[in-house]
Amino acid sequence: MSIDVPTRAGSDQALSDAARRISATLPARSLEIESAGTMPADLVAEFTENNLFRLAMPLDLGGMAVAPRTIIEIVEEVSRGDGATGWSLLIGNIGNAFLAWLEPEVAESILAGTPDLVVAGGQAPLGQAVPRPDGTGYRLTGRWPFGSGSLHAHWFMGGFIVMQDGQPKTNDWGMPVMGVAYFPASEARVDDTWHVAGLGGTGSHDIVAEDLDLPAAHTSVPYFDRAAHPDPLYRLTAYNLLLTVMAGFPLGVAKRALEEADAQLRERVQQSTGRPWIHDPAVQVTLLRHETALAAARRHVLETVEELIGSLAEDQGDYAERARLAASVIHAYDVGREAVQALFRLVGTAGVLNTNPLQRCMRDLVAGSQHVAFSFDSRKRIANARLGLQTAPAFFGV
Image 1 (cartoon, rainbow, N blue to C red):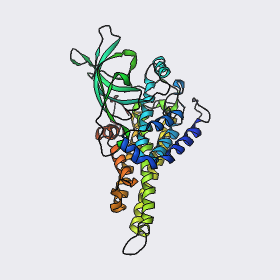
Image 2 (cartoon, rainbow, N blue to C red; image 1 turned 90 degrees about the vertical axis):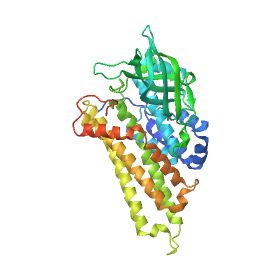
Image 3 (cartoon, rainbow, N blue to C red; image 1 turned 60 degrees about the vertical axis):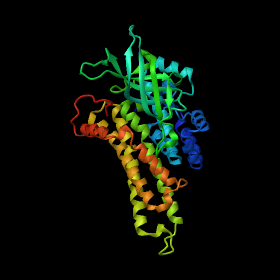
Image 4 (cartoon, rainbow, N blue to C red; image 1 turned 90 degrees about the horizontal axis):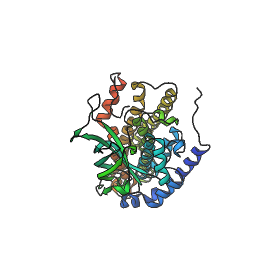
């Protein structure tokens, strides 16, 4: 099948090379990044200079037209170097990608004012938007937790419910009218709330807006419809786009954990035999099981993304077909989480030291797996679609 898609010649290889170069520097900086509680300014600048925050942005907005597979592999590579940095990279790409649901001229004006733009925030409708009397905008108030990248973002986004006479306004289906707001970071504040066990270096504080004057043009409704851009990634729903960008994180963190466990078990000597633990059959079998499971999960994600985008070139795809992609990414998180927890136990007491990368791999991947995209509610929605029981659009779809 021939697919006519926009391209930016040579960009995938250059971006992948930049990601590998940066990733190689990250293991030595993990303690620094976690201690700072955010991505260091020089790393933000390096990602920006190499266009690594524009992987998922549409080509006609200045994005890099990167193949979805390459996006996954780049996030995987950076997450392998440091989980928190990989998470910050993927969240920055999601924020910038969601500009695609704004009117093109609005997104272009935002980018023109901030060429090195990074957007942080979330789509959950936790804000309240009261319409202006003249109908040209809203007064927005809200608090959005888990704002990864909030300390280096230039703009924020936050989901909201439209209010009418003190109550949520409803649509024809009796559901609240919702949207996503985009506003400059200078017009909001960041509350210092990110004191956590895992992903400590992501600066995922609460983002707060209080009676903010919000133009209607700076709102979108990405929950149900695709964005009107020709890039292959935008054949996906917003939810599946989000999951595609997130897919590389568990693959990279778990791969790093496998490498660390292998190296440590080659050095650690079993007292009863005087031989390294790597010679113990139980250790060998455990390493093999998790290596194989991770490789299978990785292949499943990559093949499913490519198959779905290929099929969507010809038709919109039904709910059950689209749910395959979400299910594959959730499965990768489950496999990665199980691997890092097992490998942490395998290396013994040495794993608890702050200087041991394995404990950070475990904490970061378990924390990432707590994202709402992998919640029971999301799994229930996806299972419903796979079983052919979904007959109408669901919030944030599949």
